[in-house]
Image (cartoon, rainbow, N blue to C red; front, side, top):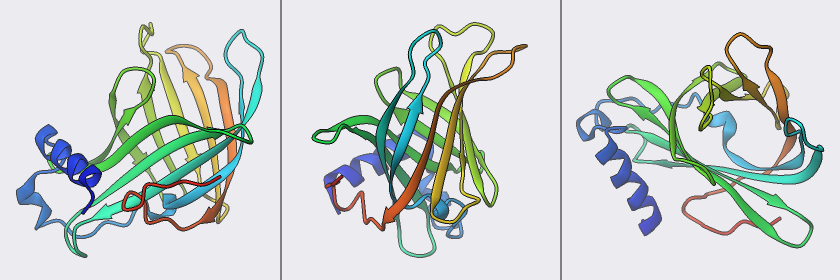
Length: 189
C-alpha cells in the first residue's frame, strides 16, 4: 500500500473520521460511486467584481477501500490545464464519519483546511465551504449534478444569509476514463 494512502488513513483515524471499531461493522457503501473516474472539461469562473475567464479543469476521484465489507474513502483532486502545464488546485477526502454516520469532506487548497458535511442523493452531491473572513455565515456552496450519465455539472455559488446566491463558477466535465488513483499518482491531460 502506498505511503500516501497510509498517511490518509492514519490521519482520518486520528481525527475521528474513521473509528477502527466501526470499520469492521459498517457495510460497504456505494452512494458516491457516481463520482469515480477522471473528468475533464471547461470551467467558467466569474469572481465578484472581476472579469470572468475560462479554464480547462481536470478532476480525479479515486476510492480507497478496505476489503469488500469495511469502509471506503473517496479521494479527490482538481487541476487546471493551460494546454502545456497541469497546475494543482485542490485536494480533498470524503469519508464516512463513524460518530455521526454522515459523510464529510476534508478539503485542502490555497486557503485554510476545511471539514464540512457532504449531502447527496442519487444524482447530486453538495457541500458548503465556509469562507474565511466571511460575514453573515458566507459559504461557497458546491453542487455537482450527475443526472446526465458521464457528465459532471458543477456550480459554485457564494451564499450570504439574507441575499440571493451569486454564481462564481460553473463547469461541465465529461468522464474520460477510469482511475485507480490514489494507488497510482500520475495524471495526464
